[in-house]
Length: 161
Image 1 (cartoon, rainbow, N blue to C red):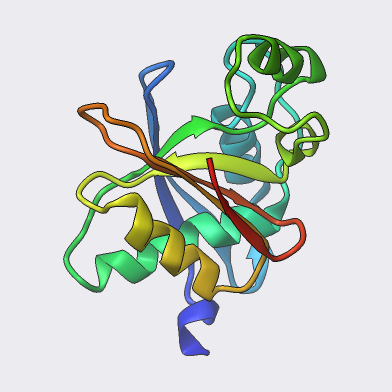
Image 2: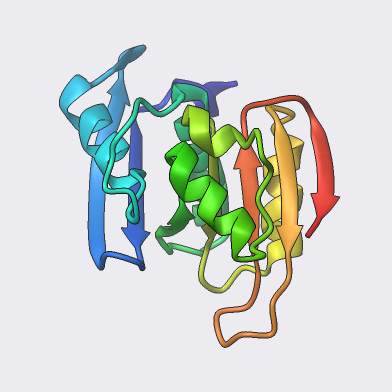
């Protein structure tokens, strides 16, 4: 329990835009607004160029994941492949054949597609599932970067895409 009482610094990268940040966003039981706003910007719809409020529970999931793996010597940033999506961006992905739900939680700022370098998708997804805070989708791709997971703050469920 002590783990969840610590100040929370999240280190993220956004491969699509080249942005990187290390932000202390929670301390003494409160979200630090300036850092929260910057995280919302980093998780914005890069294609639709729009920012929206991100569910603080999603940030908790990202931080918890990063802090937990750091205990085992993996000091990598969380790569945000997709965060918030406008309805139009989400629709375009579906039309292009990219796996995306019509009522995606990305549209509500409650989901992110993530990867942590040096951690395979199966391990990453299992860790996120252990928090019991929402859904986890596993996406395996034969690319140099490997797969990624979808993490959200909706109903507890898992799937493979």
